[in-house]
Length: 122
Image: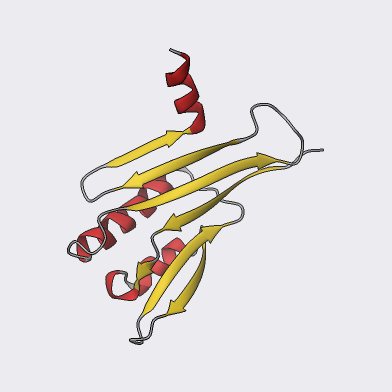
């Protein structure tokens, strides 16, 4: 039996000044969260998941949170991206790849390695 999963990271780390505690709790439903202390006493949050899954509604909620974080940062953060790698314990041809959700205040772009391959084939 094979096992496949999607591992993701969120970049850049999110400064505590730009994210609300309630938003962190929502994101923790899908991500692990590590807080890294800064010399000034603030915290930067690193979100990641070893086995990411979110349905469309949940993903839209997360994207909304990241867009609000970007807006709240007043130009300190221009974007947040969720970068993923899918893999499988068995070497299936279609079980590997990568994905990216690139979030800006007014736009969201999704792309996968399969999208890139399809474009390159043309």
